Structure formats: C-alpha cells, structure tokens
Length: 123
Image (cartoon, rainbow, N blue to C red; front, side, top):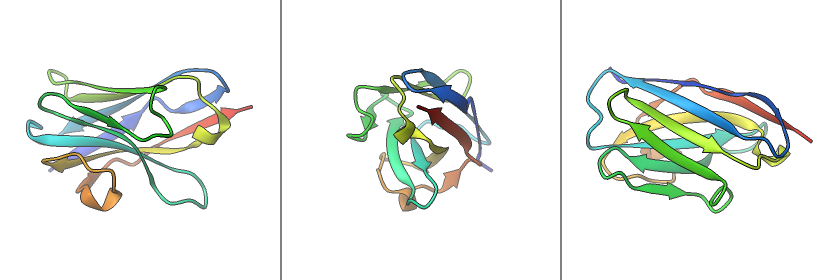
C-alpha cells in the first residue's frame, strides 16, 4: 500500500524559503508521477507542481513557476518542494500525491495522498 508523509511546513515570514518533503513508501515508484497541491481555507485544492519519477520531468503552475523547484531522491524515495520568495498568498496546507503514469494538474487524477503539512506565511 502506498503511503505518503509530508513534512517541513511551518510559520515563516514573507520572503523566506521553505523546503517541504514527501516520504513515499509501499512500492517501487518507477513509472509514477508525484504531485504537489495546496489548499487554502475556503478554496479548492490547487496544483503546485509535479515530477515524474523517471526522467525526471517537472511541471509547475504559473503561480509558483520561477519560485519553486520540485526534485526527487530515488534512493530515499523522497520528493521535495523547495519554495522561495514566499508570500502570504502561499499560505495553505500542502499535499503530496502520487499516480501511475503521466503527471496531471488536477487532484482527481491522483490516487494516493498524504495527510498534508501546513505552511503559514506572515506579512
């Protein structure tokens, strides 16, 4: 069974950087795509970016492109989301998700989800 566990969230100030981690377990993730999503209070879950386990190839939403970098460590089964120049608009619960095959930007395309980690950016 696939398990995803996010960590690294916290309270930071505007302009700070933060690296979120996603520990993946339960199977070999070759052929998987790993996505990062976020959800702010009262808003729908939003695509942040994704990475294919093989390749790898990365994809980003326009709202974070240039500020975020997604990477993975195959040996450790870890996926990372490095976020720079954070603003209060980045405040949300951040989720790691996994699916077999191509990366998509819609939450419904992902089969496995972590519990989320809170990121709060103060102004």
